[in-house]
Image 1: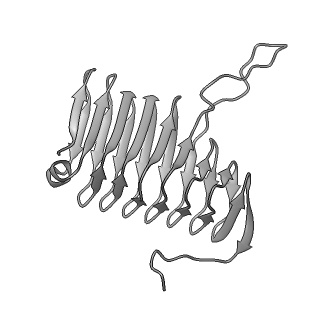
Image 2: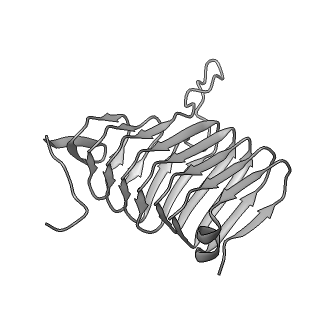
Image 3: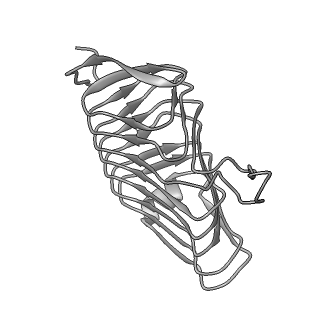
Length: 199
């Protein structure tokens, strides 16, 4: 069943390779104005669920597998996915506030993973009433592997070539070419690489 597009706003733009749109399944819903969805050639969507608010964008380069991806971009938020990146099944990309999720090329994102740029609720200083938990961007370098059931929290930066272990929670920066695991995730082995094939 082709991808369905519902526009409940105005001035929104969709640019999807026709073969990708016809061969995939899922929905794209625009809730505001000035939104953009661009998905390159050779991509695969299967039961995708993409919701785009005002001044938000979801841009995917060529050759990506977006199986059952769920995107919630509310206002002035953007997601960029580099070429050849694969989401193996259900991944949630949540941007409830102005922020960005940037995922590099040739990454592998396993099932039941969560990326969130916001806590989704406010934490306040009781004395001043000031909010103390603003949203923050998430950035993955090229060739990063995020394993099953991992959570990537706001402000996280995962440098290229690194691996995030099963069920880990990332909050902060993880160095390049490092195997990281735990809650919170910490480096447990350095100078590693990975290959999607079982060698």
